[in-house]
Length: 323
Image 1: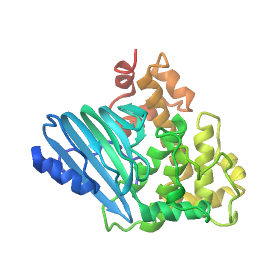
Image 2: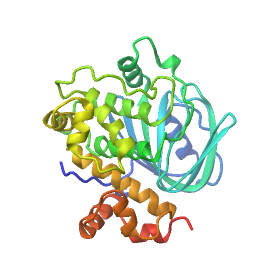
Image 3: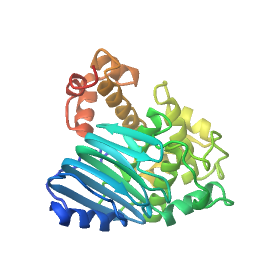
Image 4: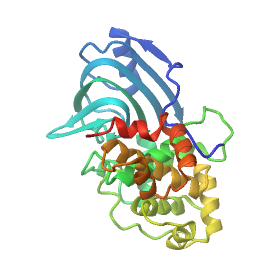
């Protein structure tokens, strides 16, 4: 598999293209609940790939839509590709635009919101997969105990690491011959979700690596936390391995086994996402400043990698970012 994967997939191969009642019925069936969809909506385009209790969706709604949804039997993380969308759960409302990540709602939680046309990537995690991840962290807790204190990521780096994991695990067609088992990959994704959004199961303490001699998921999870916290630092693979209490070779094996990439490729993908965020926000004056902040010192290679992931030149992102 190539080290670089594209976040924005081709939009011309959807499972469903339609409008009106047919679109409403399709989406309510896909997400397993009454969504209370209203508004013009226009054309609706939806594609789904399923792997081991996790669904990777692409959803584009061309015109204005509102929703007043009942609780879903899934946890759905929304990566906004274009347009704007908002979610309200009780008194909490979060708004996302291109480049943002949001958690639609917690377990057993109704939600409402809408947008004026948007293109999103939805990643849905089943109760079974999330329960297994919770048991890994605290055997005394279940999904009934899970409470989120925020529906937006803990930090820009946490959002970047979430999108990097979905980029890795969501690109392969069903039935492909990958070294990552479907169950292991799904559980790793659930752990990434718990690390991304503040909750009462995952605290600030990284915890001990259960078996520092093996290339385990625990090692990958700890490395992800280190990368999320220090993505802007001069961070080497030896630094990460030392903090994980493993050898650099064990760290390499762990990432190959569970994410099908090298730790270096994963770190670069997180850093690319962070560059995208600061360009979009307009918090840096030039592309060069943004690239250098996160360790990209070869302009040609950086621009090529950036285009492969985001489908545009970094200068284009800066030009239409926040004023």
